Length: 132
Image (cartoon, rainbow, N blue to C red; front, side, top):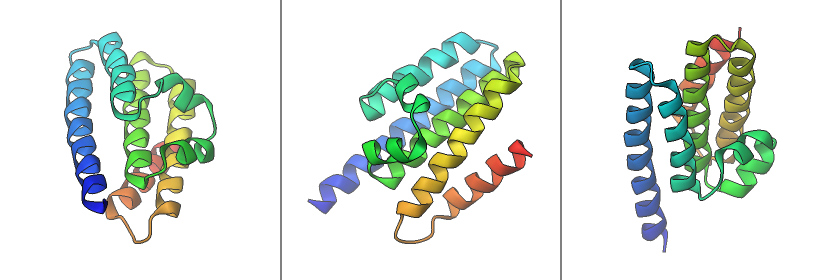
């Protein structure tokens, strides 16, 4: 059973990496709306939930819904990607809100993990630096 769950998480991570690359490419090509649509699609694909719902409820509740720390970290990466796109648009209030949510999600992922995850630690520091 644990092997099946690990395979599922590995596939989810692979899909997330591909989606983030597509989002980044669209963002660099100044196709912000396309990139934002990709975030919505990725949320539905990875989590089976609407992205807007996942960013409007508190991070603790979202973490409970998603369950696994890797899923929580994946959502935090999507939220951070949206913050990057909002920054391109000049929506600094939106950027601050998304980064705050990404940070709360990362802290939840860290709290729910049995051991240390250097990637989560680095992401937390990166988001904190951007919020300062």
